[in-house]
Amino acid sequence: AQSVTQPDIHITVSEGASLELRCNYSYGATPYLFWYVQSPGQGLQLLLKYFSGDTLVQGIKGFEAEFKRSQSSFNLRKPSVHWSDAAEYFCAVVNDYKLSFGAGTTVTVRA
Amino acid sequence: NAGVTQTPKFQVLKTGQSMTLQCAQDMNHEYMSWYRQDPGMGLRLIHYSVGAGITDQGEVPNGYNVSRSTTEDFPLRLLSAAPSQTSVYFCASSYDSSGGRGTGELFFGEGSRLTVL
Image (cartoon, rainbow over the protein chains, first blue to last red):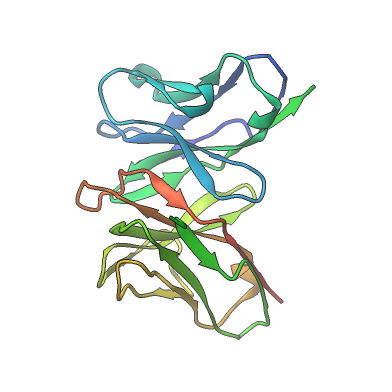
């Protein structure tokens, strides 16, 4: 069964700085990968997804992610963070008809 | 469109009580699912459904029942609540067009916070 691991529990970044969140997936066939964001007290919202093709995927809110098969990674990036990007971010993979989530990374943005 | 609506938003139960968390979606989505969210564990799938009359178990199904009599509704029943079921519960649906493989974008409700004493 495929799974994802998010190595960073918590990241603090200054407003305007770049952000990179790590996600590693377990070995399998071409994975279907997702990044979701959860603002405080809210449900999750899809940022972007990768199924196949171009390994650099653009999402909403200025986020992008790069699929690297050689590193089994699907890291999320944003060139310049805004205070509103403070949230919890989840990487997820389709696993036998189900979506499995990583433990999440909490992002704090300081002024 | 209301999207995915969950009720109640908050509930406190005593050990051994039963209750039903309601989930309704108005997007005509075939795929619906229930997750629980616990600190440091992300979201774990409880049950899911790929269409009316079809349900299946996720990672953590014990202590929970579901049914899917209509496309719109997917209630989650706690049969005999235990403190270990204290959690935030999310219902999510998808327009998934890949025969229920769960590859579509999930639309989440706002969550139901359950405390079992």
